[in-house]
Image 1 (cartoon, helix red, strand yellow):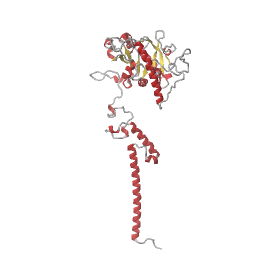
Image 2: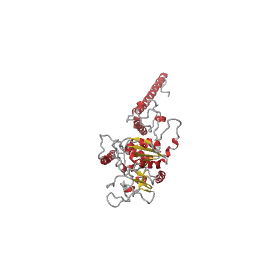
Image 3: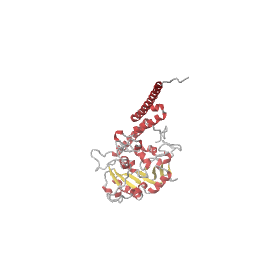
Image 4: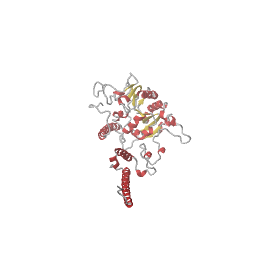
Length: 408
């Protein structure tokens, strides 16, 4: 039997029909692929949460989510006119406000070192990281006490900053070290007010330790180099020198000097209120120093600075929370150095105003009492702010939950 199709025209018609079907199938495939690609690109560019490709391919949904998160964290697209739009040109480490600048021109940190007006730099970058910083509030009435403190520190590798709360600066010029110290003046402000405004962590970042001391301290038995050697060996990120119990004004028993070793990190109190036992885990039984002579590591100060409230001046209550700023367990990294100790004279300097520097609108009568009252008020303000912040921050977990009976 012969072939079913013998007519040449019939064969041509069959071939054309097959070609048309094949072409139609190819057209549909290309059109569908273009739609998917276009839809994917559109979703990426608009940040839409409804991703067609993500529905059909699970990995695409993850990649798109990551891209959208990165876009949300980046600066406005309208201001990035000089970029190519590539993810490789974006960085999470860009300082806020510096986005329009080439990143190599941005200086993230500084220091308190003075720079000559002419000539080459003095090569300070070679030794600045080995220096520490001493900052103190001072009044002219304590000039001799302050002088003895600065003499001890000036012989070591320290940068000195004086906060003049009485407005008197020129009368310090006769002291040998005065010209190399930084003098900042603001009348009737505390060291915490000064510290919040002039000791920003990015400014003091090069210094290994920050000493934020009061002015009414005697340092006959204190040596800065030996102190820092002990602090580094013991891993103390927040510390203070112990107080001579025979000569000092004592507020908390944990600050009293022990003769058994170089450092102690807790106290024991078995009688009266606010008892402290071996298993006590809260300040002031352990993990605590007083605010009169604290010493902070570079990392601890960066945290503590953020804790200082901009609108408060006395920082009462801050000492109970400083332990949160150490890298690790506060019962191990907060301590009192016994072998290098000081005398706390407890002079009531704040509130005893000089009538020459006080406005007539602010009478000096009962100034000291008013200062104390304000301190208590601010302590309560800080306590309530802490509680409110804890309750509102769902992402924060307290490593030191308060015991039912809080010592203090």
